[in-house]
Structure formats: C-alpha cells, structure tokens
Image (cartoon, rainbow, N blue to C red; front, top):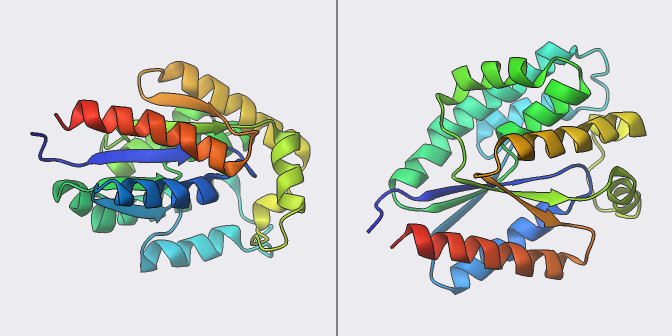
Length: 214
C-alpha cells in the first residue's frame, strides 16, 4: 500500500474553469471515501495569500516580469512547505488549482522571460517536488475570455488587463509544456459544461488513484 499521498494539479488559461472543476472533483473524491485536501496557487496559506494580493492587484501595473516570477515562486515555496508536503506525508490526495506549469506559461512564455529560465527559478523553490499528475483544462483563449466577461462573480485582477496576444502566448505555452511532460500532463477538452469536464477529470483521476494506491 502506498503511504505517501498523490499530488494533483489543475492547469489552464483564464476561463478554463479550474476553480469550478476543482470543487466538483473534491466533492466527488470525498464522496468515494478518499482523503482529499483542496488548495490553490498563489495562495492556500496566509503568507502566500498576502503575496497573491500583491501580485494580482490591478493597481500594480509597474510590476516587472522577473519580480512577478519571483513572487510566484516565493508564494509557492511557502505553500509547499507549510501545506502541501505535510498533507502528502499524511497520505492525502492534494488537489491544487495551479502549480509550476502556470509560471512556465504565464511568466516564462507570455512575459518573455523564458520557460527554462522560470523553471530554474522554481526548481530552487520546490526542490524537484512536481505534481504526480497534472490535468490541463484545454480551452482556446477567445472562449475562455468570453466566459470571464460573462461571469460577474469572478474577481477582477491584473491579468484581466492583458491583451488577447498575451493569452494566446499562454495557450501556446501550455501546448509546449504538455508536449514536454506527456507522462505527467493529461489534456482535457474544457470547452464544455463544467459537469462534463469534471466527469472526465474524475474518470482520469480515479483510474490514476486506483492504480497508484494499490
């Protein structure tokens, strides 16, 4: 029997529905009797949530790309050490809304720092603790942004000010990253109702858990 838990991340561009799907998957796994912890990045703990506020504040337009990347990595480090690793050691399935791949796509590609350069920054922060499984909710930028503009309850943040070109770079980066790590990343068509997306995510994840907890 596997003693360590399983680290699962949900990834995708703006409007992919990660937060909604994460909640549905959390409920599904709990109903099946799994021990699950749901969290998010940046955030999940007090220190990281405060860093999140700084990063996403719409007024912080002067924030430079490398400063942004370093702040994400700092929040990630504290979140990992304080919350994720202890839960994994206790055998939990950790379901995380975003992890390193987001930094590779957003800061590495869309901000132009470089995917490898941002991965190097994060390698120092996480000490090679990558997710066991990543579920990439795949949706074209136009479709994702249309969802956002139609959702009055969504928080408005600094990324919402970016032009469509930025979001296209994020999308293309996710395609490149998924090609780099095919053994870890499983793409899911996210241009469907959340319940349908969650059903497929749940099937993929359940199959993975049954296999790896035996």
